[in-house]
Amino acid sequence: MDVALDALILTAHAKDDRAALVTLYSRTADLAEDVDTECFFLTYAHIFALELNHPSQANLRARLVAYGRE
Image (cartoon, rainbow, N blue to C red; front, top):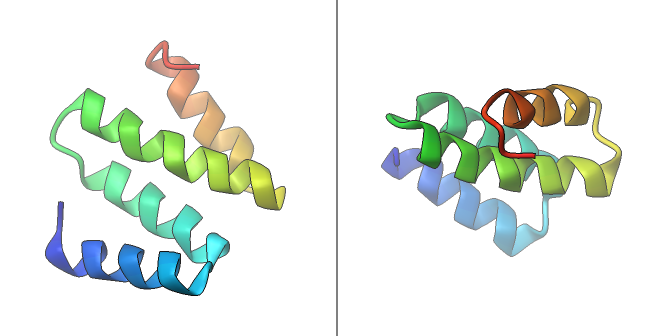
């Protein structure tokens, strides 16, 4: 994981900034080097998106479904 993204994720958790966590976990998933890691971060992004009724929730779910990870 990118050290800068890791720090941003920790800060967002500390502030309970769930909208930022959707973005940050999605970005981290995009940078993942393997499918398992990508899906790990997509799952967290999707969970926070569902909690917020975030507009990206359908896209995140579709990505997980495409990998058989629903």
